[in-house]
Amino acid sequence: MKCIVLAAGYATRLYPLTQNFPKPLLKVADKSILNWVLDTVGEKITEIIVVSNHKFYEYFLNWSKEQNYNVPIVILDDGSTDNEHRLGAVKDIQFALGKSGEINDDDGYLIVAGDNVIDFKLSDFIDFAIDKGCSCITCHEENELAKQQKTAIITIDETNKITSYEEKPLEPKGNFAVPPFYFYYGRDIKRIDEALSEGCSADAPGSYAAWLSHKTNMYAWKMVKPDGSEGHRFDIGDIASYEKVQTEFGNKK
Image 1 (tube, rainbow, N blue to C red):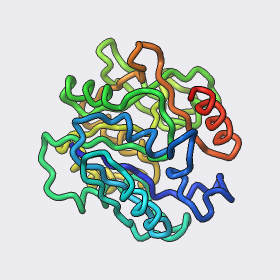
Image 2: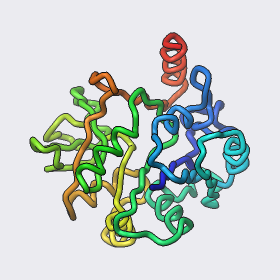
Image 3: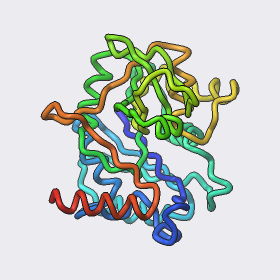
Image 4: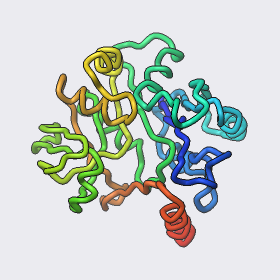
């Protein structure tokens, strides 16, 4: 089971902090944003693949040499050098797959954005996906309309199967938002070429999940901490949100 980390963005809204340094390697409390995510993936992951851009490739390469996750860490350079010429998240997934060998139908792929801090375990999400035997996404309640209109919103049935999936809806059908953490089986992740040919956006990672949800059954895991309380992800989009997360997690420590 492989974990593909999407880390090829340029985080222009965090300038000057990220003008010459990758956002996923910024520190929150005592570790990088990327480590906050990877520390939760659990023991079922057998390889970590980090997709970087060309500008920050060496930073991630140096970071990888300091890690002790007991699984191989592969750092890939997608060749882009600036925000205007980035490949986009879906094409970065496609790029990583092309470098990772044969894809079998029952292989598992955890896809994560490397620039979010989380307080739940992705290993629990993996267990949920294995139990369902289908590709899955994560979700959480979002009850503010303005925020619903800026993200993907899904509806689910009593079994957590996705019944609708909309990107940035003006009139949302539900209140479950989808953060950038996905689990795909090989049989589904192999369909990226098909999705792109049908007009799936290459930029946002959720675009592919939305497309796939209309082709096959998919389920949604409600983010939850081990103690049963609601899990959270902290999207660090600008300097103010970065400072807020630093303060909150620094206090927890």
